[in-house]
Image (cartoon, rainbow, N blue to C red):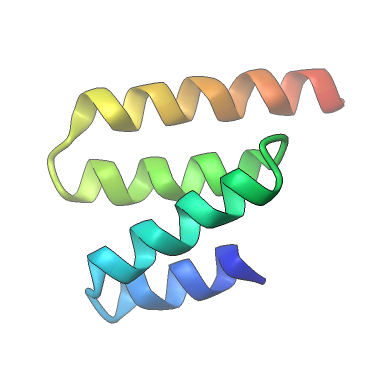
Length: 67
């Protein structure tokens, strides 16, 4: 639910709320690859490529373990 809320906030360009949603989603479920991928997308869109890369890598690791 929080990931979807974060996506909506991203679409509405409310990046502070989107980031807060993704952060909380990760805090509540640190094994959620979609949370990391979507937060990575947000970081990327803001030009924070280092944080985006970290989130993408974490999401990929989680995704590969869960498969």
